[in-house]
Length: 509
Image 1 (spheres, rainbow, N blue to C red):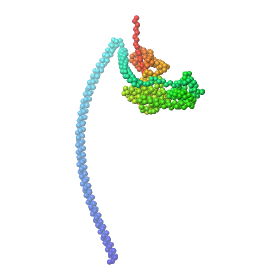
Image 2: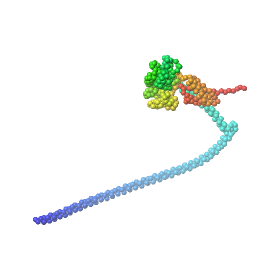
Image 3: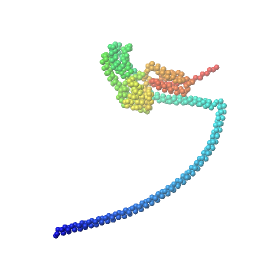
Image 4: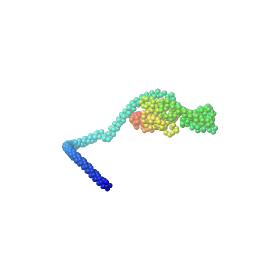
């Protein structure tokens, strides 16, 4: 076959195939487009139907809402009409009440005018009556009022004085009974072994020759001793003795012990003096520590810092009016514990307050301030209970007493110091205290004479009866007692008695 013909046939076949494929593809596309158009029409129809349903439901819902709103508005309109009717009715009632009030006010005004008229008439009658009374009594109203007030005041002052004396007598009698019982019980249960003790820094010598050895050549021994011990050695004409003087009781004790040991040893020279003083210083420090611990054990006081006990041990070498202060602290602690048990207070805190109340006396020569303030500050620094710190600071009324334990500590201190044989004072101080009591009492107005009796335990005051009445006598006694408490220091208590005597004298002619 001719190749050209074959190629032509193949070409025609290819064209026919392409045309057939094209038409077939177009046919398929037309069928798909038609199917899509039908599906779109179905979707549109469904959407239109759904929209119609929604529109129909919305119209029904809107209709129901409108109907409900109209119904609610109708109900509110009805309720508003009712409220309006109620307010109109209330307004009418208020108007009626207002009218009645106006009528009543008019009636009251009319009555008030009548009352005012009658009051004016009564005032006029009162004035007329007062004038008639003044004429009859020959006295004005002011004079009568003053005389009446004076009479009433005099009678009232007399009644007040009588009632005050009666109440004070009853309270004093009952208080004294109770106080005597407590104090007697406390003193009986605390039978102190020490009545009075005096620390004397006097060293006895075996012979007068020892004075020269103590002084040394050109005074070198006594100078070395005074410098090492911090004391003054007084060598005078007193036979077979020398005196060690120092404001610090501990240094005085160290000096006394060191000088006594030097005298027994016989070797008195500067090098040996320094060694002996150093040894005795250590020995006294040991005694101080043991004394503080032993005192706390005897007083049954626990929980104190070691520095507090050491400071208390220094009181072993301190005395007051001949009374050893460490023994006094133990005694006060026991008394405070007994009083606290009887009164229902805290026993432990009361005993601590009594035991530590004079701890400041162990340091008051080295620091400025009162022994109560110094002791309170020292104990506060070492963690002592605030109640005990207040008891220490207030036992001489330098600050206010905040607790009953502070009052108990002060009372126990007074009992320990005022009991017979506890303390003693020299004649010069005694005379000075007696004279101060009498002069202080004479400084008050209306006092005629003052006498201090019973060794200064009582002051009796005679007053001028024309200047001081009964009530003023009681007030004067309290004022004098208060001034004594504020300005003087004394053991125990001082009784103040004011005596008022009225004498009437006439002469028969």
